[in-house]
Amino acid sequence: MKEQNTNFDYNTSRDYLIQKEYGRNIQKLVNHVKNIEDREERTANAYTLVELMKQINPTMKESPEYNQKVWDDLYIISRFDLDVDGPYKMPEKDAIGKRPKPLGYNNYNIKIKHYGRNIEILIGQAMEMEGEEQEAAFIYIGKLMKSFQLIWNKDTVDDALILKNIEELSGGKLSMPIERIREEGLFDSNRKPSYNSNNSNNNKQNSGGRKNYSSNKRRKS
Image (cartoon, rainbow, N blue to C red; front, side):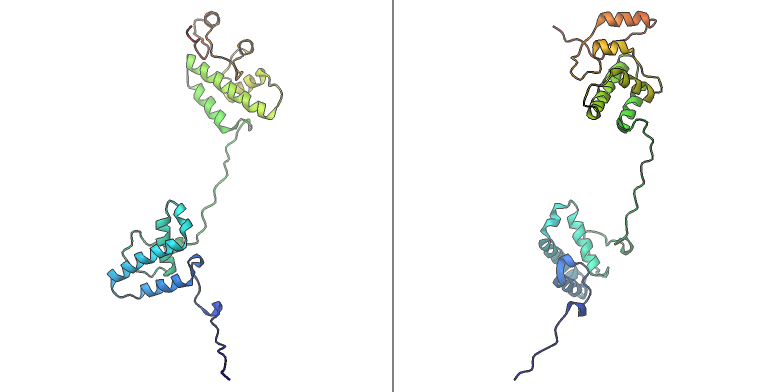
């Protein structure tokens, strides 16, 4: 009766598998390529090995830098001991496995949080404008802020609240009579573009000669 061979090849007795997704055979091939004495032949085999590694993990092609990643993996499997003329520089050994630096929290103080940072940026830009351009920006911001308010408040939102918020965020530099906002529906999203010459002339007289225009001109008939 023949004696059975009890010398099993357990994974625990094998070399540590560096890149598990490629399997042990790739690691053996990498070790073989490392030992090729001729540099030109060694480089040619490395290119062939990279193509084989791509076939083993075809999903890697979804990455825009997958080609460089495969070469990096090849160098990692070789324990950074593969002298070939590859298309990419061998990665730094210390960079492998290093944790990325934690992202710091944004400590910017948003005055009215449900409007967000972008509204404050728009108000800052509007403050640098003048005349008709500033008024158009003012109305646009008011409409946008009202739409944000309606997300939180399913009922109607008072235009006076929107005006108050704009004045607060602009430090009082952006303002408009609440009566005009309500009468002309300037903050209403369904408001049609219009140009009211009477209101413009009246505002011109009341403001001591400064021109005030509505945000949009009336369509020509």
